Image (cartoon, rainbow, N blue to C red; front, side):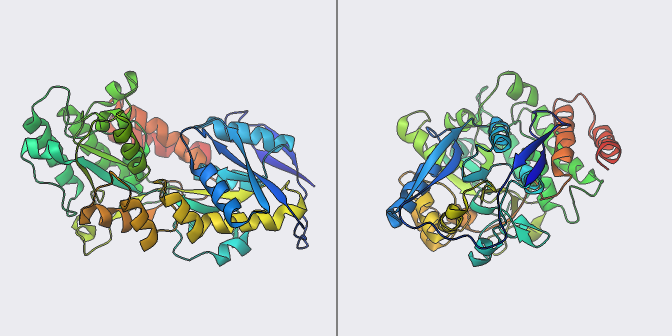
Length: 431
């Protein structure tokens, strides 16, 4: 059958790509004998999760080989994958890397309905519930990163500032950032570092503000979060947005070489920091993880569940897959999103979608990972809400909010004015 997928990945905004699929209504017969399925991924040199899952599945299922196909990293992944989907040359299983584009793949008919796989997964699998579209699921999470607060214990000690204890609101964080900057007293070292991504502000505002909705047309919930960040950069407690973007600063080097005492960042950075300290790319220093600061005290403290954000990374099955391989591909997805896949990912420092005691033990058993109770609490306990809720308007709205972020953080447009402009644009351009 012919299907069309509207390109949302920069190929041509108004163009559509005709795709050919073959998904039948009847349950396909499983292949008999050795089977090879293909899996899309990116940047294999620095992203070992794909080979790890392929090897672990093959070890458990010797008759099945998972061959990897490497695509470009970053936003180029979606562009290149979309071109292959249009040409009927995409791998059997592919990663839906950006949640905001999930609906585009689903509506384009490029993903098989795998509701049966989703229904067999542990309900505690992070990011699983938001993947349902009109009662059906087309991709399942295999990893779910959540945003945390990294801090350098030695810089805190040098500045004479109390370590995070899990009770921090954003106001506490801002106060500590300024105290650290002054207490450390080195021109090139700031109390905290905020990377240039819009998610570093908007993700928290959307997740932590009661009643906030990306498609609600009212973005006033962003205002207090931006005002706080502007005050921090005006006070010199973090590098300015202009400095970050002009000099192309990397968060890894800012925190890893002790140019910042704190860093709000996703849980993926745990494995990166451990590896960089081991290789010498990052300095050797004692660090810890704390819950990300909260909007107010109602969700602070280790007796409560802190609210943070993070999109799941998911995988689905191409609708162009040979029908004889469908059941094998589904079994691979069950493995990748289940406890066995989670255990394999945890062994290399990747945060899986299913976090249980075995996963936590594996992560905190890695050499170099902090061993204090607050770090383990922060890693294992949180209510993680999506930055990009699944919806038809999400990608378009996020593009507009990305421009708002640049305008506000560069201080070219006042916060309230930028929010009003974004609300008007969404109403007029997205609807």
